[in-house]
Length: 261
Image (tube, rainbow, N blue to C red; front, side, top):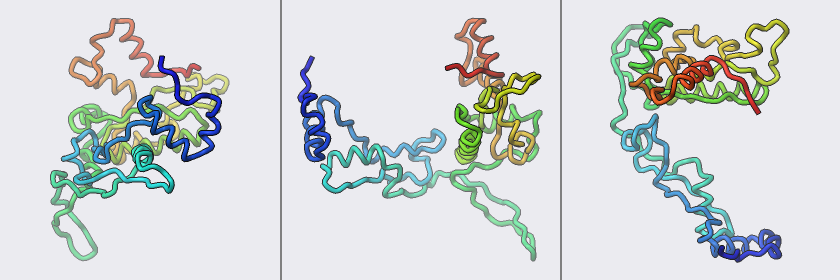
């Protein structure tokens, strides 16, 4: 094995001296002490899986930079690629962004037809006739892009805030939100006689799936319904490669699961 150039004896001396630390990082870069910076043109902001040339506000965009005093430019480049979460320049809107029009606009004086541009990021809501009976069919035909998540394992307020952020992400990215299986939530232990053994779902606390106008903007399905839609041969996650035992187990855990440490 290659001997380390930095011994334990002078380790503290080096990390306490910023200039020496930079020199050490740069001299030992062949040992991967300093990560390879990510290119500024790799903004990774593609919307819902679309390529950059079909994504709003990406043409000509570059990742922002961070410039710290008394820092080697090569280290500044690494810091920028790891910490800069903004674009500079931000880029221009792509001409391929789809819009819909001919919405009826009303005001106090008259009714008129006028051109209305759809928001470049927020997709058009699903059909007005959406209901619980045609939800899965509509999702598969019109909103077959999904967002799955694991609930926060902290207290209720942490779980609530993180869930609201997930709902917002689903709305902005035009995806169908897939709820995790029912499970026991931290500090919401079951009471005596609880037939569900403490297992809860976010819909127990939020009236979301009964609000069809909301569901037109953010379709919400259960993990069990997701597997029903996408677990077949033509699905996104076909279960054809699993034996009968594992297939049965996967269907079971979509209904409820338990947290194990």
